[in-house]
Image 1 (tube, rainbow, N blue to C red):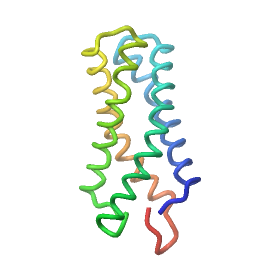
Image 2: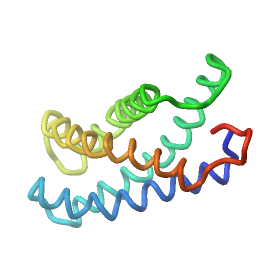
Image 3: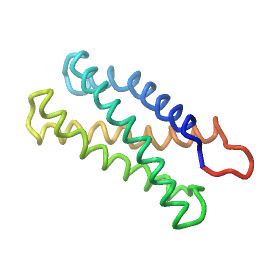
Image 4: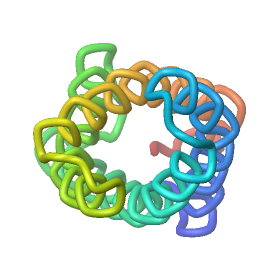
Length: 141
């Protein structure tokens, strides 16, 4: 399994790159000032970073317990990304509604838009991370 410092590097790299991409895209897509998108992105990033560490660790533990390995097939990677985004959606939607002073419906639409972006992003990032930072032979994530 990946050591805690590797998981921290993974989470921080994931969130920093996401912020670089999401602020300009969110500003354009939602017609909101960059400081509002930036603020919800920073808070969302902090929440997502903690969720990322907890979720990935838990997912790998469950996977190892049930299958005896943490190796992920394409299907498992898709499941991993979808479950991650569903959990994050539940955590972030109330914050978006409150901070941006929008309805829960509007927050849901915004959060689903972010989730669609991050679903693709998480899949690509995690695959690339595993390729760029492979574990030593014989070890699994």
